Length: 87
Image (cartoon, rainbow, N blue to C red; front, top):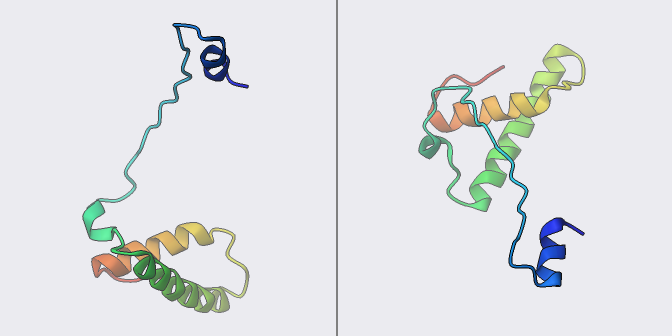
């Protein structure tokens, strides 16, 4: 049980809240509005296209790509922004 839950249960007038700082460091100069998916179906379609392209990428390199999340992200952002797609 968290300290906050204990304070709420005990009726304490003081509640302790743990806080976490999240730092976001941009990795590319891409406008979020340009890369946002309009719907779940749009995102699913983009993932399917990335998966298909990534399968071809792995065939070219001749091995499993352990860095596939970064590859997918780069592919999806480039595709959405109309930029050159990774190979």
